[in-house]
Length: 429
Image (cartoon, rainbow, N blue to C red):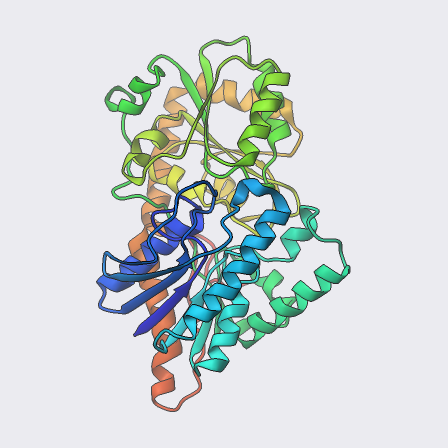
């Protein structure tokens, strides 16, 4: 198959969607498919770096278009201009590329699915949208757009058009199915393929062998870690409140591995709370992820109330891969909360419940045997459901099911039998 992926971010960018798309594109290329990626020359976080316009990497043809390059740190206005410039330049480039069998749009920039909708008509090809989050629903929750305002109604109209016209929609959580159906998408056009842990050979590394812990002088510390994007959907207030309660305990260190404007906000909040044992580091290279993630004794994941079915923090699956307990804060009805509860992988904590978060940290610190039991369960869950290879196989099945029947003159539909661990098929209620 000839497959064109469109997403603002791709290798070597560190954004979550870039890393998952890189795994998928390279995995399909290794299976013999002709893969092209259309993305931006500018990194998601902005800055002075500019990636090459054309590149061939791991069997994937990469075409990058120039955008205004304001980046994530520029605020809503700058990011909006970035998004618009990418849409315009990507469309100009895409119409000049050879016609693929299928176009797959991902999650960035906002409304990127509209490019797939347009190309499906212009090039008479098929379109699948990979729904990692759902705008404008998230925009309303984050206060970016007002409910039923002009921007909201316009974005909802565009979203409905590209979702309903797509040959298939791939969601990353069963909770997303209902949200997507609200846009009028037929149930048999939606399936679930969870995202996976990124990084080659991601596996637990014992603390005595962990060079990351040695480098940052964490050998004798109990490390509470947050590794990933500090998004608007995260609950920093509860986390800061708990760390303030624990600040006199010099053996507990909080390690934040992230970049972007929300990191500066975290610095300000931690300074106001007079936090002492805080270490803030930039994103780590993929070949170091096993060391950095394994350096944590427990990991924090946050997902604000109301985000069930709209987003799934991708950091979850890397934590499973290295076998670490999860302290999940926020939306109780979502994929990650279910995962933690069903498989006893840590503690689910309500937003603003600082006391419970402090208690969970202290309890896990005092119970190394319990942490080891969680480690075994977490790794087993990862092996069963969240390995990149198995989910790339599911993607290949979906794409083949959409494209191959068309060659025989039959109506094609996206396969619906893809299941998720412990919860039956993706479309069961």
